[in-house]
Image 1 (cartoon, protein in one colour):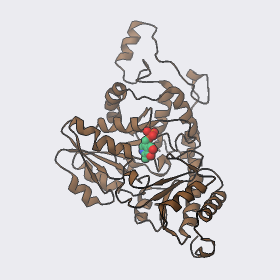
Image 2 (cartoon, rainbow, N blue to C red; image 1 turned 45 degrees about the vertical axis):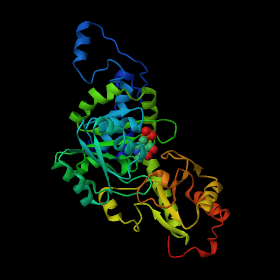
Image 3 (cartoon, rainbow, N blue to C red; image 1 turned 90 degrees about the horizontal axis):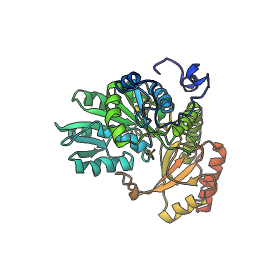
Amino acid sequence: MKSGMSIHSAVTHDVHDERHFGAVHTPIYDSSLFTFPNVADMERAGGDADAFIYSRGNNPTVRALEDRLAELEGGERARCFATGMGAISAAVLSSVKAGDHIVCIDQAYGPARVLMGSYLKRLGIGTTFVDGSDIDGIVSAIRPETKLLYLESPTSLMFELQDLRRCAALARERGIVTIVDNTWATPCYQNPLALGIDLVVHSLTKYAGGHSDAMGGAVVGSAEAIQAMSGSELVLLGAVMLPQTAAVIMRGLRTLPLRMERHQAGGFAVAGYLGSLPFVERVRHPGLTSHPQHALALSQMSGFGGLLSFEAGADRERLERFVDSLAYFRIGFSWGGYESLVSLQEGAAGQPRATRPVLRLYIGLEEPAELIADLARAFRAAGFDHEEEVREDVG
Ligand SMILES: Cc1ncc(COP(=O)(O)O)c(C=O)c1O
């Protein structure tokens, strides 16, 4: 935190602001434009990239959220977008031009991979996908024309990590920009800029908003990089955040650290339960000592969320029956809200190394014991006869 405040204080503390009559929550400035008392003031504003002139460029409610996100991520500036993909597209496009090359981890969020692997080809930008856990593989994919290393740690289905310090260092010495999607860990549990990464992107649709009722994205980094992106990808592509959305996401942020503690505890409780079942072959959660990159996780993260996955020894039909039998877990793709979710993903997820069906669980804010009871009920309904076989050595 730039201010040195704890994260709980940083998300709740605002200063008295006479411009808003002392309102504790920044009001929604739902004005598309801002006018001036005279021509001279208007001209002065035209020369100030931060001035409030037109809401596609700057808006006070959105700015309040941007300042808060910059503070939480330890960046100089942040800009908000209509969605996480709006933020990712802008950050990527601001880092490359025709003829450049990108190295991207092969487990990045699907549409981000399509953007870099297919869409950017049209603009003469090539991408090589690499196993992000293999640092030598990353180095050997780098070419003289590589300008961007795109990372997401942990990834959101297989929960693989990249060594962010090493990636940042090797990119920096070659003049390559680094971007990390930090949606999974949130600023509560990972601050990539402090590890040397250039730009952090977020889907605020997930934990930051926290209530599955708003979509948004953000890019955080140095003032120089963010300013360059603001003048081009933000205002030209125009995927800006609405002030109404900024107010909703700011409200979500107030409780982000509290909710993350709860998601983390629920995630560990469910992961421990799954790990105790003889027919569960693998639980993917970087906070478990069984995770192959657990030591790396501890070295660059300070906590874990509620999104995890597992593989069970059963055919697809039985896995579907299990999912369909769940009562608390709703079947859906997103995560970060209050509600627990489940999805059954395989080949379609397009993730290398996801060779078998993977069950992804998102642990919401419900009572973990009730979620575990729900899972047990659904396993029984699907014919996983586990009750008498539960191993007693795993907590
Ligand atoms: C890890 C990750 N990054 C980015 C995004 C894109 O965010 P949005 O849906 O807000 O565009 C998602 C969406 O699921 C995601 O899971």
